[in-house]
Image 1 (cartoon, rainbow, N blue to C red):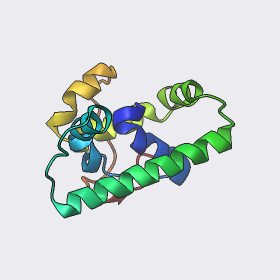
Image 2: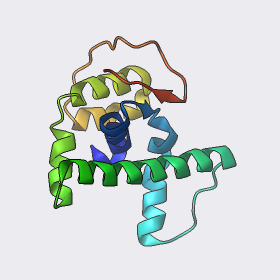
Image 3: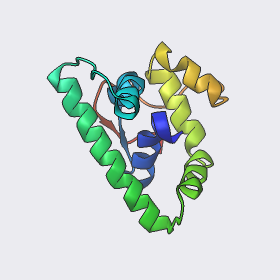
Length: 131
């Protein structure tokens, strides 16, 4: 869950809320591929690039905060912690309800069953999440 919606779970655990994951989800594969393999970065609007940049900064900050808070000696332990977090089903339900159809493959890979969330339909921004 870290690579795609990890920023959401990290933020939920550390900050008690999260930004809409669509801000980074749709560009993740493209940007990761360019970062890892080289090539031309995708042409995105300045506003989208700025949201992505802050999402990455926040995710990194939350990653280090959680590692310190839980004294994780290795990345694998953090990944297990996030993947087994008791709030994961609620966050996946939120993504299913408000993320849009482009998340379907990710949700299927995470064995998520559809269930309605108790949240008001949000727009881009920060959310308290399913607390």
